[in-house]
Image (tube, rainbow, N blue to C red):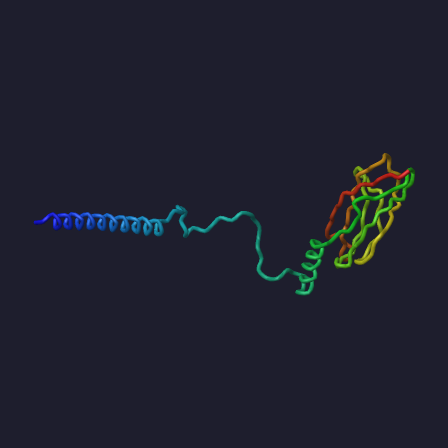
Length: 180
């Protein structure tokens, strides 16, 4: 046997060896993959009912004493209250010793519900506006007492009203600046 034939046989054996090792690795990877796909990692018995939180009785059917129109109307008022937009100056002015607060507060046209606003200082309500329909505003508020100091933080509370009931509240902090 010549040297070339021996080298060819040796190379052929090495190639066959690597092909065999590669085939074993591919089979091992496939085996691991298939086993992981079929393995149930969740030890909970799937035939048992799932315990849910809460208690009480659940009844079948529509809400009693509410027509479809009443239900739609109720859901619309809740949606309208959650989408209510407020418009108010971030800074209001007041003359020293005066009770007239100059601020712009509006119920923008895009709102569909009425509202009234309260001006609150240190937990005390100093002003309550009349009911404002959409596209109405006020320019000043007559406070129940004058403010002390040069600057006062105030809360403007929008009370959102539907059919005579408050359905939502939004508050905005503003600064009242005293002018001499």
